[in-house]
Image (cartoon, rainbow, N blue to C red; front, side, top):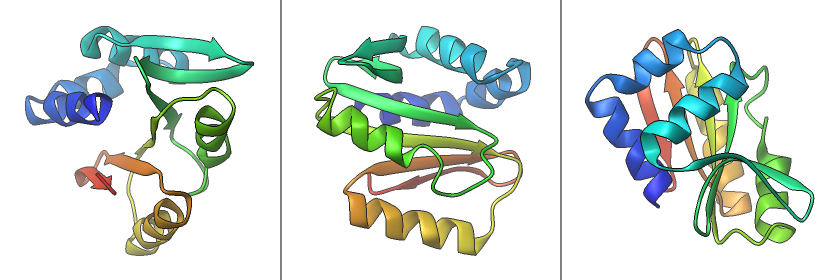
Length: 129
């Protein structure tokens, strides 16, 4: 998936941390990320908004979500209503627990979605790549 590969690449050069730290809100974060990834931000297809998209790929972004399952309903709509072939959920959080990651893994397995979590403490974690 090009979007996830791009996020991994940005993380490896320290750019992802910079984008997180300079973003004022989720909308601005998506726009900055899209700019660096060569993607589109906030694309609406069949009434469903993709925070990030490239071709047949989409990503639902959640900046500091309160729940591990945040964004999964939107991601499923991106697959089943908007018709994207490859969809991931991207969470940016302060810290993560093992329970958060385990629940996220279970949800990814059940929904056949990919996810990545960027923790300001422990860095980038990818599930179901």
